[in-house]
Amino acid sequence: MEKILKLEYKHYASIQDMPTEDRELIEAAESACERAIAEYSNFRVGAAARLESGRIITGSNVESEVYPAGLCAERTLLYHHQASCPQDRIVALAIASRPSLRECYPCGQCRQVLHDVEKRQGLDFSVIMSGAGTATVVDRASDLMPFTFSL
Image (cartoon, rainbow, N blue to C red; front, top):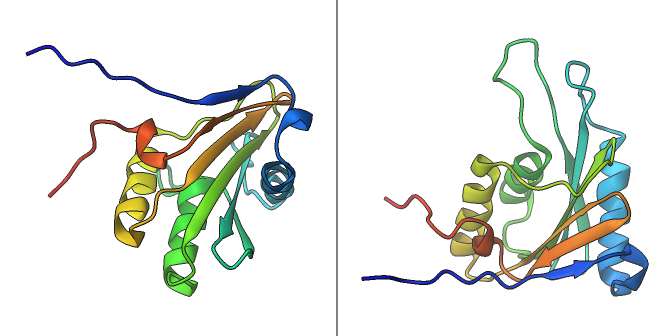
């Protein structure tokens, strides 16, 4: 049986064309890059999530001398969210990087965890991948990982 996988997304040639809420979330993710610990790769990544309450929380990547003990910005944010305020569900998440030569996309592990969070909270959330003044937005994090791991 043949099936077709279709991915719908929005691409913004300029983040200035985006809704104000999305631009604010990108700015929070960009600010989170400043708190990254990236002394080995010099690639700083920040993530910011808007919660149902309107509150914005952030995370940044952390590298370690003991590779692979580091953690991506997205998972830093998501695990902090689960530990501190899981009842205030995520409605949108933005990712940014420095340097910002292109849009910053989540790795495979982060895509799985994004999907896990959507499933656990019972609410889909958009993911905004920004960089170099542009952005791509998917309406559901699970769109980034159509074939997920499940127990």
